[in-house]
Image 1 (cartoon, helix red, strand yellow):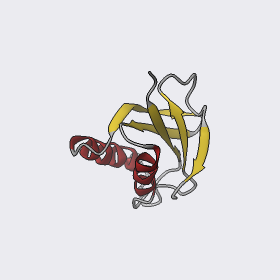
Image 2 (cartoon, rainbow, N blue to C red; image 1 turned 90 degrees about the horizontal axis):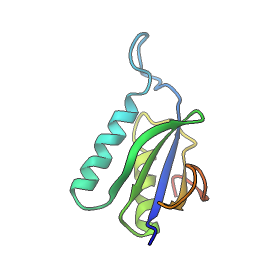
Image 3 (spheres, one colour; image 1 turned 30 degrees about the vertical axis):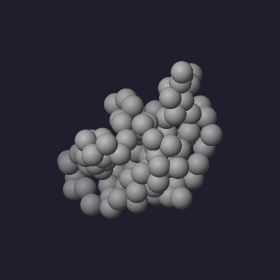
Image 4 (cartoon, rainbow, N blue to C red; image 1 turned 45 degrees about the horizontal axis):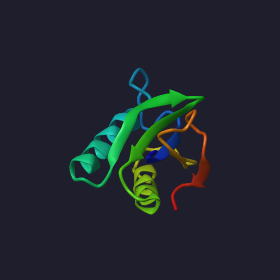
Length: 108
């Protein structure tokens, strides 16, 4: 049986506070740490490691209802330092490709 997956798509836009020569996307590690904390608390499961896809960074979460996961995704994308314009894709773990599914604007 397939499992519900919510993909969180964030534009790979450098953080505005990054100094020249510093890593341009410190928000990636911050989001990964935040998702790991939520996973440890039992709120969700991190489905796969995040990855870069077509100019976006994609985090995948599962382990809850669609509404629970979308609320979590909304909280993630409103964190300080994240580029605006993020969205979610609701799919299943049996889905063909990342980005294949129903698109939902974030934050809700």
